[in-house]
Structure formats: C-alpha cells, structure tokens
Amino acid sequence: MQNYAATGPLVAVPNSDSRQLIAAELRNLIAQVEGSMRLIEAAMMREAGDRAGSTDVVVLDDLTPRYATASAALGACKAGLDVALQCLTDADEPPAATWPPGGGRI
Image 1 (cartoon, rainbow, N blue to C red):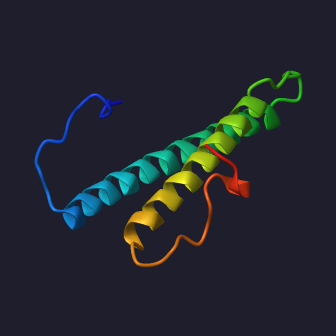
Image 2 (cartoon, helix red, strand yellow; image 1 turned 90 degrees about the vertical axis):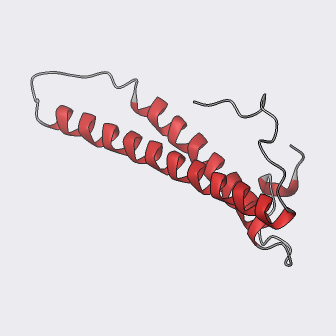
C-alpha cells in the first residue's frame, strides 16, 4: 500500500481540480474496500461449502467471527469514505449523513 501522508503535493492545482483529484482517489479507495469485502464474503462462502460437504469432520469455526468483524470494519470504513466523497462532490449542499455515525467526535 502506498503512503501518501509523507509526500507533499506534486503540483499546484486550482481548488476545483484538487477536489476532483481527491474525489477520484476516494472512489479508488472505495473500490478497493468493496473488493476486499467481496473477497471476505467469498472466503466465508468457500469455508461454509467445505464444511457442508463433510459429515465425518467437526470443524471448530474460529475464522467466521474474524471474517465478520473484518467485514464490519470495512463496511464502516466505506461509510466514512462515502461521506467524505459526498462532502467533496456536493460542495454547495451540506452532507446528508454525519460522520462519525451518531454525531460523535473522531
């Protein structure tokens, strides 16, 4: 994963272009999070299928809760990214959702 926090701006761009670049990066991050969520779902389905096919073996499932927790964390991350994207793309309108959920502080 690339670390953009330590790098300065590459070029000076007008505010509207800057917002568009940030919005594009947020869309990319959202796509990556969604891809990870699909991979987790596929892994859970694959493991469920592996267990269903075997009646002689009892499997102590310690991975499903971890997958579910990871998926929930990614879902929360995606929600935050969606709000950030909406704030940038709807510059003239206030965001419909608040972040963090419940109006708390980050």
